[in-house]
Length: 267
Ligand code: ZN
Ligand code: FE
Ligand code: FE
Ligand code: ZN
View 1 (tube, rainbow, N blue to C red):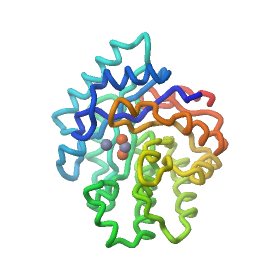
View 2: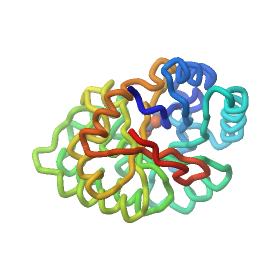
View 3: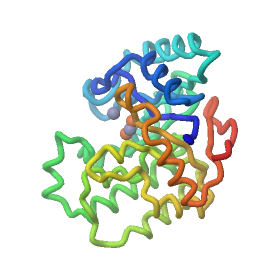
View 4: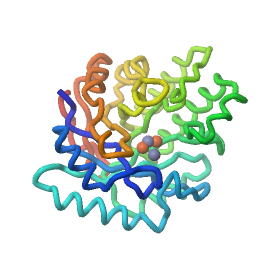
């Protein structure tokens, strides 16, 4: 059995995903999902890079594209319009303005940068060698905390993405995760189980089983995403994600509409 929602998928507009939204939607139907949401990378406000995010001028097209899939499939599949936006400290006001330009069903807030280092970018992988891994983890968790506190986002994307390349901290990070759980609860954000980690060197969904338990204990709601950058990954490993959620003590998950939790569905 799979949870019937996948809220994290991309489009070719970000410059590193393949396949038309129609193909993502077709795959979702094939996988037995009844609700999906697109969440392509919002234009990066710190610098322009057409290989990692959409450009400001493409936002309009993004919306028209998803709306047409939504309208076309409305009897078969619920299609939500989300977006994945970077949390960049110092850019909060500009991010708020960017997100206000169009209506969304939800906004996923993601930390992909520590200062200007794209720590999850394979092209910048070498920089890990020069870093203090414990400090990287602590800096990362602190940014995620700040992203929740910013109230810019509805869903916290891949809440322990820092583990992607399988660099392990030697210090215990449980305190950081606890602190994040409190911040999530306080700002009312939802966490996603993002199955893309299973396809990365870490071979584990984001967030870890331990982190999920901590979020559950703090009453942080949950939702699901595959982070598909290709149609074949839509709905991928959501069966495993559901098991992880149940093991962590979750009983239900959130679905969104108009930037609010529309419903809590039983797992
Ligand atoms: Zn991406
Ligand atoms: Fe991301
Ligand atoms: Fe993504
Ligand atoms: Zn992502």
